[in-house]
Image 1 (cartoon, rainbow, N blue to C red):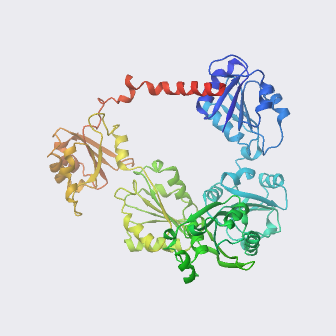
Image 2: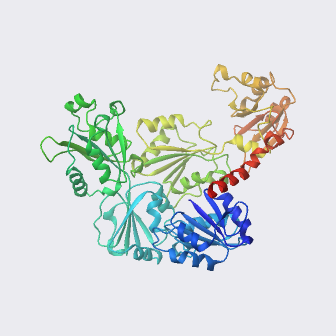
Image 3: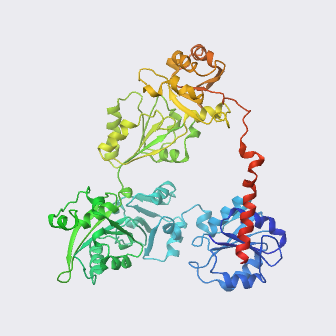
Length: 618
């Protein structure tokens, strides 16, 4: 946001400086001669001449001057910039103009956070914690239309808590947000036929489909459709755009949901492409070579097309490529409006937004339910099935599951049984969370699971978690790296029933005398101690950390020569992290970042500010 900070009186300069420092691309303007401010002659005249040259105006001072300055400039909420007023003491931040569309409400909250001030937002939907329906589409790159009523009336129906139906045909960040924050007066549906329209005052729909309904409709058109096109050389585009639009309408698919137009490199200079890009103005153009398309299987292969292009179907293969192999909604469709102007097109939907099963592998963290990530917690709250490693993950982590969710421990299951239950839920189009201890990438045993998911083409994603080595550093109040002494952390385990690769034997890793965090090794602690003593001094600090962050957490410190005794005397089990190295509890290392050699880092911000002011004056 290009932002003008209008300093009404010198008393507000400190507040203006703080905002200027925190808000990128902002400049302070004042009628007074003040360092780091751009001099203007008159506030009202400046606002009048620059009103549409800035995305936002932030007035520091009296509200009356702010209102009188902007009043002659007001035109339309869709074009007016955001206007905010901050009192000169920085205690209140008021959203004055263009709260939703212009972003003033969001900027107001941001500035209030910067100043530790009170945000004053008078928009009803914001104060009620409800969706901003007029800007929701732009936030998630959805085109927005309404039918049967004005936008203001639709917003009023929603805010007044009349019964509203919400239809979600796709799944993306926007629909996940709506599902997560859905107010009580809104009922969610995934199929239009399930909605008894007479029971609702309006319908909100997120779908690429054209809807014919009998109640007022607020329609969000997600850009999730990908159009693949092929044609004869030098094809004349006249009428083809209209033909495709008519076919989309016949198939009840909205042209506003077209995200891209694609073809093969051989056709990149065809006039038809330019015509289609103008028709679908919000679309991007994808050009693929034959090599990129050769692995894509098309339902209607053509040997003749292959001879010319090197692929068995231009329209279908390019549509599928753009959609990441999502479903074809329109298979190859041939058209011929005039002799010699043959063309084909196909339409596919982005695979990522298809409402189907999904598996999220979530790192639970070391044990404390509060140490799971925000995303991980949200995944647990949304899951239809939570399958957690019961012997390693506290059950308390699953208590946030939604009503009706299935929560199962995998402790007594074979790998095949785990696969079976996950696939059962997945095949029903449901959301599965596989909950692993710590971070899944560290001894998480997810490799075989991912191979299974890949084999069946299942959608999955990994949410990382805090590992126990990080929890150990926190519990030991230690920085595991020491400037000029220890700059490496080794995560490994001792050799038990599973052999270690020869080059990763513990005594070889010990040569570096790095900070070493040893997993899953309490049962072979004698061997661990013996190998480490080959290179670490016997008095090297060690810590045996049992069930880090759990209620049962216990930590035993000592020296390396006593490691085996510490573990055995305290009956420590497999859930023990062994840490070895001089970094444990070290307070002698001093980072050079805070030495006098680096004072230029702290001068940089002042230099940047002066340079910005100089450019504004130019």
